[in-house]
Structures are given as structure tokens and as C-alpha cells.
Image 1 (cartoon, rainbow over the protein chains, first blue to last red):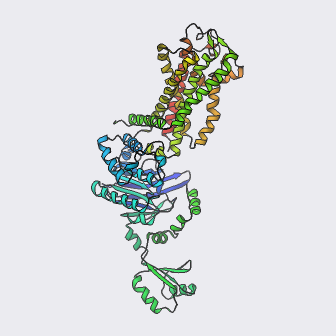
Image 2: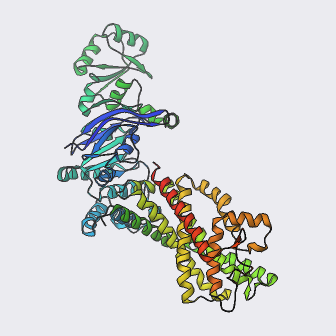
Image 3: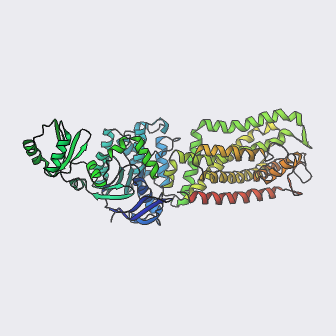
Amino acid sequence: MDAIVAENLERRFGDLAAVKDVSFTVGEGEVFGFLGPNGAGKTTTINMLCTLLRPSAGSARVNGFDIARQRSEVRRSIGLVFQDVTLDQYLSAEQNLRFHAYAYGLAAAEYEPRMERLLRLLELWERRKAGIQEFSGGMKRRLEIVRGLLHHPRVLFLDEPTIGLDPQTRHAIWQYLAGLRRRERLTVFLTTHNMEEAEICDRIAIMDHGTIVAMDTPPALKARVGGEVIRLKAPDNAVLLRELREVYRLDAVLDDDHVQCTVAGGQEWLPRFVRESRQPLLSLSMRGPTLDDVFLKITGTAMRQESAEPLAMMRRYRGRR
Amino acid sequence: MRNEFLRGLWVVAYREWVRLLRDRPRMISSLAVPLFFFGIIGAGFNRAIGGLAPGVDFVQFLFPGIVAQTVFMTSIFSGLSVVWDREFGFLKELLVAPISRFGIVCGKVAGGASLALMQALVMLLLSPVANVPVTAPLMLTLVPLLALMSLSVASLGILIASRMHSQQGFQLLMQLLILPMIVLSGAFFPLNKAPDWLSIVAKLNPFTYGVDSIRQAFLAHMAGTQAAGAASPLSVAVLGHVMTLWNDVLIVGACGAALLVAAVWAFTRQE
């Protein structure tokens, strides 16, 4: 059985469509990622799948349960880590977890051992009696991951999971999730605008302006870029650009003080170009395609730029809510 | 517990208790404020005003009002806890848990109301200072009355909170609605001696009947007074009819039921 099946999901806020005609299937045990800039509709999609928002149109099933008609069955079978903290600031770490266990109707024999194991793994065991107010951002996020896994969910939703986590903790979490995936067939659904995080997914759906613009495995997506990304710099970039376009028929563009192009079989092409070209080169570099390049290729806009500029990001976010 | 309503009810109510016990400042302030009212107003006016009815001085009159006011304040704050939960994100954890929304609302109401009832009982420890005897028969009447009132007011708090998205909004509403409701309820002065406009406004205020029910219970159990009956100058009369304890209970209960239904409706249809 598939873990998630979404069919033509749509969500409007007033006359603004945050999510339009989104369809996808996530297999059991798969790690599936939504990649896209802020405001692309990733969180809105998660909120619909976890029964917080009702779809304006379309339908979805999570673990075989309809998200509109079998809400409590859906809720029982999923774990969630939201983008913002959803812990009770007035309780201790342990009390937060116990509250969760009570709310999900777990028996003590069921959750106590798992709670200890998870707390130790995420290095929170010593601090379990402390109040949440004393926790750092990373500790809160780790605690939320413990909580999200406490009731043995079959699908774990992670909304921008690694914000505020250091690389070691991130690694430990992914290792543990990989283990759960093997042992319990846990399915992970995550949203991210972080390219490295997207790399660990089995499959990625790229979202922009509320729709899925591409969906495939990371290598297959990168193959769409059509080769290696080569960056060159010459004393006169304009001449270099013209040569690449006219002689080599490449779709070269000027990017800052470099000329950039994508070449299939770049490993062979580059030495040949260096031999043949009359251009004195000041610098050259070649790399394999990244998901950034994929996003740029498909949507025509860069994603990283946007996340680097908080103001532009906010403007976009505001405009799209 | 298998039932999603009952589980929601108890985990949410339980959390209200755990939270209060961990929040010392709130615990202290919710007891200090009524003490302050009682101490200052009581001491300030008692000698100046003297007896209000045969055998009832001002402090004895005021004490039931202060108890009612304590219940009101604490219960209405259960609404603030919903706003807090929304602001700090915890409401999301509740909303995605496999518990029914109806259970969550009832848990908030029950949690807030039971805290208020607890607080009212603590206030009763002051009864010797007010020279108001607290007897077993009085308690048998008083506890159900206080419970009914705290459930009704907690429902009002949740109803307001379902539409509020910030603490500032809730605080503003406190100033505009809650304070007038308390002051214009006859908790602090007898309505029969108030000017007409004031007494009309007070009689439109449902909380007036909550206060009256509690005061009637106290006065009926005070030895040597006939202050509770129709002849008493302390009774609340509406259009010439003197309210009995049962009339008051009916009004508070009807308002409470309507508020609870409205609160459930408002809370369950939010997204």
C-alpha cells in the first residue's frame, strides 16, 4: 500500500490559490521531499495531509485513510515536526512527552522504553527534567523529533526539519530515521529549501507557485540539467560569451564576472575548448549539476538567491499568503 | 482511554492543572488580587457604610461578591490559555492529536472551571475575617453554585479566545468587557441603592445573577438574618420580581449552556 496518495489537491485562501492541482504518490518506506522556495505551498500541503487544513478541492489518502473523512485515523498514524516550535513552554521536556503519550492513548510500557532510547540518542536524556524555557532552538527541535516518533507513526512529516541543527545532530537523526525505515517501514515526508537536505531523499517534488513543476529522483532531476556546469572567466567576457554561443552553439549566460554554460560530456569538452579557443582564460571551473541548477533550469529563477535575501523572501512570503 | 472525547477532555484539563502548578506568579497573583480587593474595599468602607440590612454589615455583604469575582477572573483566564497555546504553537500539537476538538474545548472549560472552583474554596478560608460562618449545609449549596458559574464563565472565555489570535487582543477585551462585567454586577455594592441607569445596566449583565446566587446562599445560612428573602433590601429585583436562588441558577445555567454551545461551535470550526 502507498503511504500517501494525493490527487489534485488544491487550497485557496480567499482568492489566492496557495496550492493548485497537486498530485503525487509516496511509497511505504520512502523518503520523499518537497523542495521549493518559501511560499511555494509546501507547508500548506503538509497541513492538508495532516488534517489541519481542509482542501478546497481534490483529495488525499494517508496510510489508506481519507484526510477529509477519516481524520482521527490519519492523525493516529502520523508524526509531525512543524516548522515553528509547538512545545508547551510551561512544562518540562519529559512532561511534554508524557502529555503527548496521554493524548495518543499510549500505554506506559509502550512509550517509556522508546522515550528513553530517543532521548539518549538525541542527547536530551540528562536534560529531561528541565523546563523548555531553558532549551536552545536546536534542543527544542530535537525534542520535537522525539515527540513526533513516540507513538510509532507510519509516516513522519518534517517541515524544514534541520533549521537550527548542527551537522552532527543532523547526521545522528538521519541515521536513526534510516534505521526506523528499515525496521518499521517508516515513510518520511519532508519539506526543505536546503539542497543538501534534499539530496538524501529517494524522490523529490520541486514546488513553485503552488504547483509541482518536476518530480523524480535526485540523479534523474540533475540529469535534466543536461551536463556539467562550466564557469569561465576571460579578460573580455563579452567576446567569450559570443564565441561560446556562435562557435559552440551553447546556451551560455553571463553570471557576475563569469560566463556560465552547461555542457553534456563536459569532461571531454573542456580540454578541447581550452586547446581550441583563442581566448586567454583567467579562471575556469567545472562541477556536476546540483538541485539548484535543476530549479533554475525548470523555473527560470534561482532559489538560493532568494533564501539568501531575507527581505526578498519576506516580500514573497507576504505576497503569497 | 479509547474514547477520543474523554481522552481529549482529561489530557487538556490535566494540563491546565500542571501548568498552573508550575506557574507560581500566576498562582500568587490570582489569589492576591481578590485579597487586595477584599482588604482595601472592605476595610475602607466597612465603618463608613455600616449595616446594609438587619444583621448584615458591608464586609459580610462584600465577601460573597469577592468569592464570585475570584471565580469569574480565574475562569475567564482559561480563554487566555487558549490564546497562549495558539501564540506559542502548542495548539497545533493539540489539533493534530487523535483527540476530538469537542473534547479539547470541554477539557479547557473543565480545567479552567475546576481551577476557579479550587481558588474559590481557598478564598473561603478568609470567611472568619469577614465574620461569615461557613457551615456544611452552606457548602452543599455553594459548591454546585460555584461550579455552575465557573463552567459558564470559562465557556465565555473560550468563546472569546476562539476568535482571538493575540494576547493583546484578549487583554483589550478584558478591559472593555470583563472589567465592566465585574464592576457592574453588584459584587461590590447593593444594586437596589444604585441609580436607575446603573441598576438597569447591571440587571442586563448575566454575571449579576451569578453573584446574587452566591450571596443568597451565604445570607440564607447566616444566623439571625432575614436578609435573603423577598423583603430584604439586598435582593435583586427585576421588573418588580424578586429573584430567588432558583431564578438565578436558571439564568446562569441558560447563559452557560448557550456559551458552551457557542464556544464548541467557534472552536471546532476554526482551522
